[in-house]
Length: 205
Image (tube, rainbow, N blue to C red):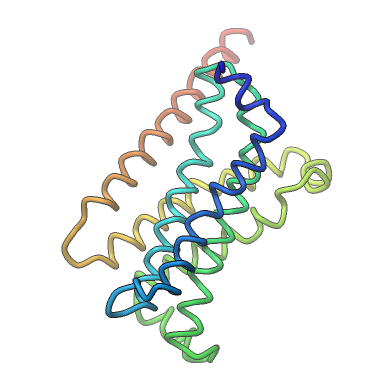
């Protein structure tokens, strides 16, 4: 079956939903089987953080893929992917808030101020919140051009997320560096596109 037919298939979005949800299902099954290691809370916290970054990169990749392949139908999956980014980010935050601070806001704020990697991670979560809240047609119409400007914060968010990961790990920097390289390439692609648009606009004027 051609790729275009696959992404246009009525079952494509439900299947994509299941695929995005499968990491959480895997975590739940591992918890049931007692296969989360010596520190289950730390394992789940790290896994939800990892999947936040992975899905964020996937979300950012959809637009360049659409441009390179010409398959506009790929954009059908961008909003769902972005909302799953916020879902896993919320899980990541809530596990930390509950396990490390027992829902104590004062303790949480003190930790945010004290530890830089928490500061940047929490900042990324805060910036991600309005993007998730405005990921709907009503907000797009209401905000107009400001909607696109608001959602360009995603590049700040992924930078903060990668910094959060880099400052958290103590030895193995391979995975966060891979995320950083992919994010940098996606940013450079966007910058190059803006340069071409600016050049074309300048020549036409």
